[in-house]
Length: 109
Length: 506
Image 1 (cartoon, rainbow over the protein chains, first blue to last red):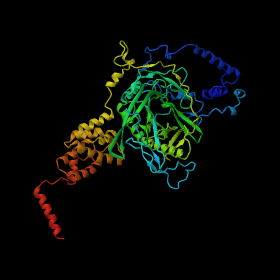
Image 2: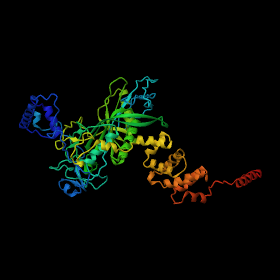
Image 3: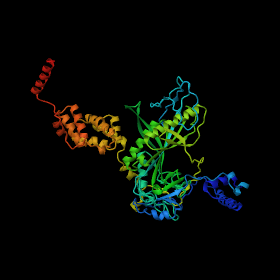
Image 4: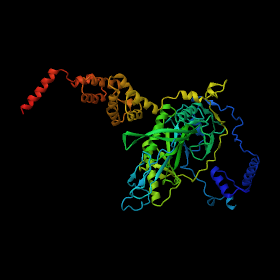
């Protein structure tokens, strides 16, 4: 089963990944095939597991004290652009252009 | 228990000669609204206009900021209006290598709220990641509870006045689908002139309780009343200060309309509602807009719209890229949240690491509905009075304080509180705490009235003087303005005689 171009385009849009070439797509297909092996296991009536710790309490609860923050300068050091003490971003999300409008390997598929 | 609290119906009367509403940037033209939602719950049959009636359906998603010192998963401070990016930890900024650590206080707040709303508290709840890209969400995902939230299946009762008469109140119930814990995002300030967005992460990571109300409401009025009651409950619990103006309480409305007997219509989501008053307006506008659109042969798009408070209408929101795929996945850095009750409490466990639902239940304060009942029972006031008392911050306490300091019956005191004190405060936009007349002064004045040392007209005059806040006591003002009631029979006869004599001379 091949992953369709629609799904690949959808994934590029959602996760902002770039499949770039046939090797990238192939890697994805192999990963899906690998994970699909899980379907061979019969899980009827079995609750999905979300933690190996199961029902043992272990989620640590922190006291409601202020212990962090006040490091504006350090945080802004990473910013390419800043205005006063704000991070600067484009006016809105810049959507990935549609497949037809892009020069991408997926176009040829 | 009846799930839907409303069988009310809207009908639109077409004005004579009105053509199709034209397209364009102006807000949707407002026609005369024919019939408001029937508060008694009966379906209104298609009347003279011959048009099939419409049933509006309104559901709400409410985000309440948790009142806590620090954030949901980090130790940075929660505070309104601080210098930009000063209340941000490395985790809040999503720097690599940081991990979430759950704040106990936030969990307690959610449990309290769930209990107050009659929910079942899930002893095991899970955290998930909801992915989407936005500048104020540095991690690219929000930690929320999509699969198993902390509380489910509750209810909220609220009251409405029928026909704007406070004397006729009806109680309605809305089902609470769930309450979940989640992170707030940062704030985006749009700078259109320079075509950029400024991002402040102070709010990023603050704890939120999302309260989802089922679509059991059918008008702006019902939605507003439900939210108002929720606000009072949250403030009473202290789990959220719920001040809408400071963004501590945000409401999104889901609105659709359909004909009786037919399936629900397509719904729109309305955002950017900044006050309870605007909530009612936004919902009513959207209901009206959908009815007119459908009656004109149009269709409703499943879209997100923003409420424009200046124009009083809803407009499609920009930046909506079609249906979002959030790719929910379990939050791998957080194991399940386990809560206990008296029965399941483990022995030999550090108290600080244990949250006991029963312990919290026992310590819940009186909810507004209980407080109102107690006021009515204890003081013999009317139910609608109790609503007004609780609606104003501090008014109920003021009332009780006055009652305790005067011999006047509470039933008489309430008139002075609601008619005189409250109207003055409203006129001058003052809160009860800012009142120039203290409960002590008012009680003093009412005592003079009760002892018949002054008339009620005189009392009102004294009150006017007291508002000036010049520090004079009621007795001093009475003496200054010579407002004492004359008790001496002889003196009264003399005055009457003089008046009669005066008349005869004319």
